[in-house]
Length: 282
Image (cartoon, rainbow, N blue to C red; front, side, top):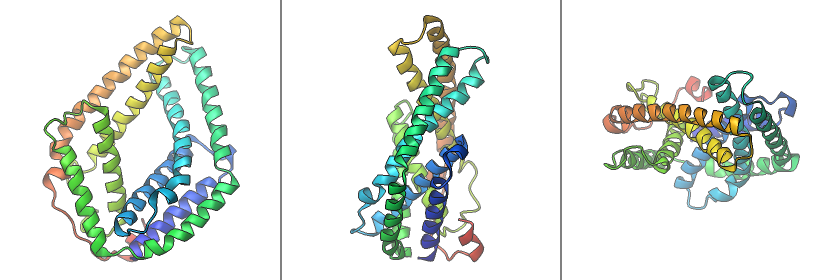
C-alpha cells in the first residue's frame, strides 16, 4: 500500500533527522517533535501488528520506547518550568527553580547517553526489517482496523460511568484517540480534510488535561518529600491549587465535547486512492 509505505518513510526520515541533531541545538520544541514522531510510529506499528500475525511489535518498538521515555522525562520538566513562569513571579521559588533546572540538565544528559550511535544504528536495522510488513498492508485490513479501533473508542466514550473522574480512564481514552487519529491522518480516508464540527476539540482538551495532571503529580511528590523550605512549599501548594482548578475546567470542557464528537455522530469512512499531493503532505 503506497500510502503506508510513504508515511513510514517520512517517519523514519523525521526521527533520524532529529536524533542526528547536535545536542547543543536541541530545544524544548525538538524534544516535543521527537516524541510526536515516535507516537506516530507507535500508532503505525499498531496498524501493522493488526494486519500481520508475524509482526513482532514489542521487539521492534523497544528501542523507540526507550528514547520516548527518556525524552518524556525531559519534556515534563520543561513543561513544568514553563508553567511556573506563568503562575509565579520571576523572583519567587528560587531554590525550587534551581533544583528543577539541575534535574532537567541531568535528564537531558541521560537522553544523549541513551541516544548513542549504537542505538541509532540499531534503529536503521529495525527500519529495514519492518519494510516487508509495511509493503504487505492491504486496504481491506486497514478498513477493518479503522472500524475496530473506532468501535473501541466509542465503547470507552459511551460508558455510562465515564464521567471523567478517573485519571486512568482519561489517560486510556487519550492514548487510544491519539493512535486512531495519527493512523487516520496517514490513510486515504474519504473526506478526512473536511472534519465535522468539534472533531478535533476532544484530543486538544485531553492534552491540556494531561499536562495539568503531570505537573500536579510532580508537585505533590515534591511537597510530600519536604526537601525544600517551608515558604516555598507553601507557594507550591498554592500553585498546585491553581493548576488543579485549570484541570477541573478542562474536565468540564471534555464532558461537554464528548457528546459532540465524531464518535457519537460520524459514520465510518472508507478508503479511497490518495492524490500525489496528499501523499507527499503526510
